[in-house]
Length: 369
Length: 105
Image (cartoon, rainbow over the protein chains, first blue to last red):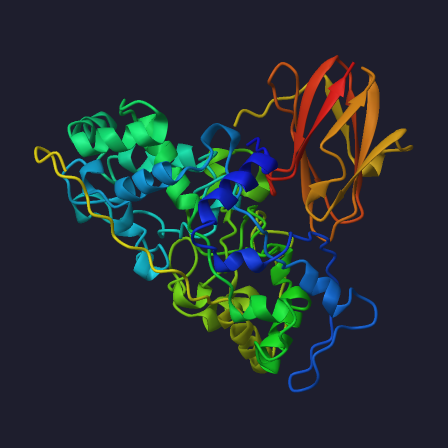
């Protein structure tokens, strides 16, 4: 995806002059990852070993960016984001008028649904868990299996899939187009009142890109506030970037490499392997999820098969299935119970108090509102 | 994704490589050291995995066909020969954000 960062920053600053976002206090991303084993004592001081990068070097890899990137062909505007928010919450996008994007991506549940796997059209269970939309402006390939190339591309997926929102893309466009207030909103966003799904997808994607996590206690620690997180959590961070090898995949401020890895879950789902057949390392591989607000996003994994963060850590330690496609980054860790708890304490520092998202008032057909 | 042999780019695994190419591209911090590189048609480029994680190198040639990728563990290297003129997309299937373009002239 090509992006003109200058334009993007300008667009972003223009938007937020009236409401400065908290997360802008961060600086640029410093991607200088070079992870080595660190010394982390169960009850001792928090310090890296003498052979690896310093703690400051490690922390620099988690600096937050200072602007939301918007693609050249879908730049930000207030009108477009407002339209996207309406569409995101509008059940008229589903074939029977009962499901909106927010039905599964519920802002009160960190843009997920709290279920093991999603529930689609006619209350039928889907195959995989609902991923969050938080911080996706920085993502590349989307969906657990990476089959969507952009947020615009992704927006059409659930609407056009029979199992999810019923699969009636054209009907959804027709229902939206029949509402005069929607047509005015399209004119404000795109210059003309033509309603198309391409435009709907652009608006939804724009709204989604504005959903960015606020600073968490971890970010305040990264910024220099030593009191922001406990020593236990600091030891967990050293384990995360060292012995536990979490940062091999959960790297950068969003705690994801946006890559695809088989982490040894006992599932027949091929994940990325079904999209890219013939590549052994991609069989059973799924996209690395962000860890932002992870403590509030249970259950975990692409199939919702693990209920607690403690058990997630145990899975990475000893619980995974060994098979040819297993990620080369996976190996038995030999964690103590104290180290498992330190890691969980660290993960809990990634929780931010995010701005509340208002459910928009949806325009009604026939009343010209 | 269609994965077929790409005649224009010969992938030689590190174990069989006697010499490194004149041009090298480092893979570090889940990025290629450069986004673009121009070589002469027929010239080789050596990719070195200077990262702490395993990478894949997959190439899509000027005709759109994709060569089988090679896995590189940390410390490994692989050499690709860009035989025909044109634009080649090089990326890592494990970390798809990691991509670059090589133009053979």
